[in-house]
Length: 178
Image (tube, rainbow, N blue to C red; front, top):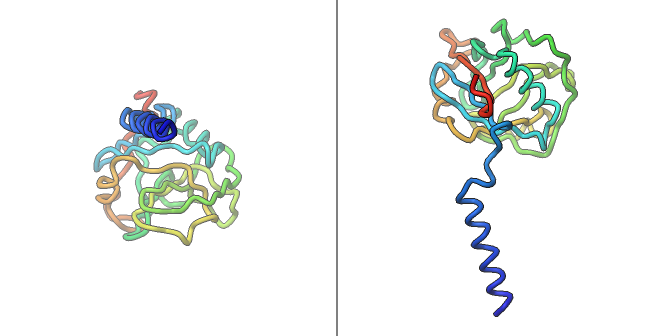
């Protein structure tokens, strides 16, 4: 009987923690993309890719992503942004980041870092998955997951490049709305 009461108490405490959002990402690890279609909230995953998350945070702090278009948007696959030239060939002035591949599955809403053929060439470009992309598992770095706004991502104009590209109007951390 004591074991049952202990189990029920632990279960109830867990339910309270979940109900109060105790498992939600901290504001320092929550990225908000204000896009031309609406807002997208991304939980950053420093537990999976600390160097990538740090680079994203640095670029967000410099307003690097503000005004940058989604230059490669493929139906059933992903929407890519992060190139200030809008061509898919550009990046930031920060150094490239070494790969931080994990066993995390690329699924709808996963945010991964784009790169060239060299696994250690990621810099500023990233993509948000529309659908399952298991063929990317272990080959690209996962650094985030969309927690709100996939309906917004679904509305981003398609094309390589899109004829009328949508853009990131403003990128910010929830802890710093400026």
